[in-house]
Every structure is written in C-alpha cells, then in structure tokens.
Image (cartoon, rainbow, N blue to C red; front, side):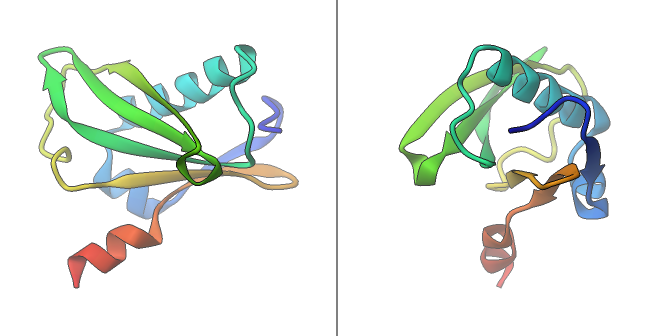
Length: 111
C-alpha cells in the first residue's frame, strides 16, 4: 500500500485550496506513516485543525472510519487562511497512483 514508486496525483481543487508546502507536508507525513507501519487502510483522511503556531499546523490522520487516528504536525509558516474551514483531504491508494483530493463532505458543508 502507498508504494513510493507510484505516481502522485493532486486534484486542482486541492491545489487551489491548500498551499503547496502543506501538500508536500502531507506527502512527507504519509511517507513517515508508511515507514512507521502506521498505514492500515488504502484511504486516509487528513483533517486540518484550527489550532496552529507561527511555524506549525496540525492535521489528524484518520483511517478505518476513524478507528485509527493520530495527530501530526506540519512545519508551515505561510498564510493560514485555508484553516478553520473544516477542510478534509482524502489520500487514496489506487493500482498505479496515489491520489489526493478534497473530501465530498466538504461540498456538503458549502450548501
């Protein structure tokens, strides 16, 4: 699962919503999760916390419908306007790619 050799795909919606250094931080977190044998599902949700410091933001990695959850900190000192909106990023392991997209749940909160 989540083989490093697979192509990575990030949807345009993620690129428009989340700063590139944060996207890179999620990829690094996923790689570390894999190295630590913490990946138990082919789908991982990353939920952004509203809390942050000047140079750190926090995400919760959720697997198996939330049965497996762990908070991660990401080094980031840029604009934090994207926080506080309940954004959920979904990372899916597919046969040839690993894709990152915005959760459909985010669309429901806009209604």
